[in-house]
Length: 256
Image (tube, rainbow, N blue to C red):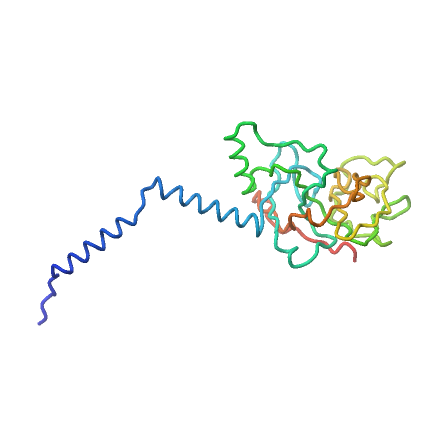
């Protein structure tokens, strides 16, 4: 019959040394917690810079696709920053872009003058709770470089290269009245064009045609209302909040 092995002094010493080693590796909470927070923030910054970012919809210019209004809970959207490294923007895509200089006249910062509050707002912007401190806009691409877009008296809708585009995703009936002397229901507002989009630019419109200050309202600037592709931040892939509106954001094949 084998007797139980008695622990030698060497075993006890080794176990004690191992325990002490583990205890030495444990950091105090006031160091451990900040390290975790900093690691999470670094990961979030990497994701938001190179992969995708959350944005808040502040207005109703993209109704019914994206919900937003002053003083209400706007949709939180995920903007993919990888897609346009793999392919060019195309008509029907919903995109977030930085407003060209001529679009920024009415932009007012939403940041507090209090440095602490401003810092919290900046952190909140990276997780979609606060809008970024820049004139970032969300619209749908209607035409790309080299294409001619218009909507004139007699047209049955917005046309690109002479063909009426699909507008089934737009808000109907129109939110605001249209002056029949300067526009039409088919155009979703004032007549415009023809505009030939410069290469490397896109012509954008809001899905809420009568409540969207889009390319149509900047035709007199250096880009004829179009947006350089370099200013596109990314493609809107999904609504992530509120829970009742979670879902993908469709890119319609509007020119076919």
